[in-house]
Image 1 (cartoon, rainbow, N blue to C red):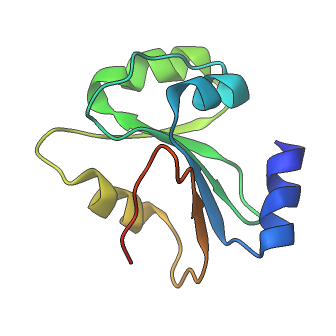
Image 2 (image 1 turned 120 degrees about the vertical axis):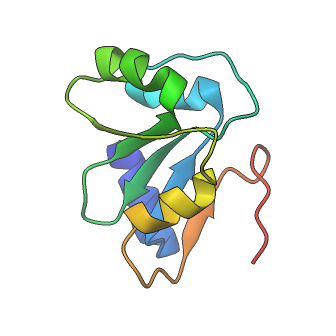
Length: 105
C-alpha cells in the first residue's frame, strides 16, 4: 500500500482504482471470481483505501478484509455512478489499470 501511495504522489493522482481481481487479492486478501460486475480497490489521496464490490460479494469481502471499509452496489444501480458519489469532488487525476479497465473522459 505504501508503494501505491508513493506512486499516486509521483503521478499527482487524486485517486487510484485497482480492478484486476488478482491485484485486488494481492493488496487486500479478498479473492473473487471475475465477472461482469464492477469491483475495485479504491485509494484516495490522504484517505484509507476501500473496497467497492457487487452486493453479492459484500459479505465475503467483509470477512476477508474486516479492517477495511466495504461499499457495495446492486444490479439495479449503475456501479460507476455509485462510486462517483463515494469519491470526493473535484478530482483532477484518477489512475486506473488501463490494461483491465477502459475509461472514457
